[in-house]
Length: 296
Image (cartoon, rainbow, N blue to C red; front, side, top):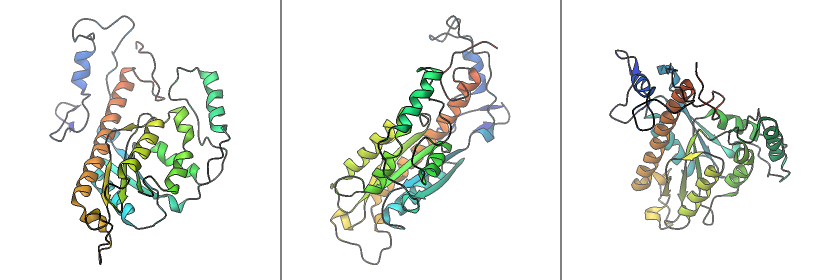
């Protein structure tokens, strides 16, 4: 929260946002790792953060991968995005993969070759790799989705359980994100997976794991185990009659979903506050990569 009186960020009762306060930065400027004495040679934190309230707004992108529109999984994600917005300073967007033309990954490795070419020019120690624009040889709607992912601060993936794992729509989308595994342009973003199953204990864990591992491979910071819920009576595969979204009857699942979504929102705010403070201190290059700390 922004304090007009002190002109600094402080942590409110909910733990939001910004542990990087301006007075705090001033106190540590002349301290070493032990908290006293000069910083190590070559280190200089003379810069002061100029972070303002408008800097600390984040966007959470929800991506649902299922052949069914307006079903339980989409409802589950919609409620998750509402929970994220309740944290404050959070905007959200939901995209349904069924609305986009997404071809299978061709395995041509053009994305990898381009990343390697750029690394030869800038060096292997530059992370993330400064890839500009869309990095895939297949021209379809994944270009739109990649752009949305790069613009977001946090990502929620949602998919139902199909035969103990995720459905083909979500897997095809994940395969087409291979460039991010190598260029790490998503490394400063946070994420969590969500899933809905017909039966309890029938693949929810493996579906969550498939999405979480994919997010980790892309360099995102997975900040929650995620959440799962069932869309049948007590998870026994018995449809709940006259209920449009049966998943909302799973109170435990709905609670876990809200916890996961708010954790993503809080972590996105904290990540952004920390990144801004580190950029201003010269610890983090404004391109997003780690750079040397230099004097003014």
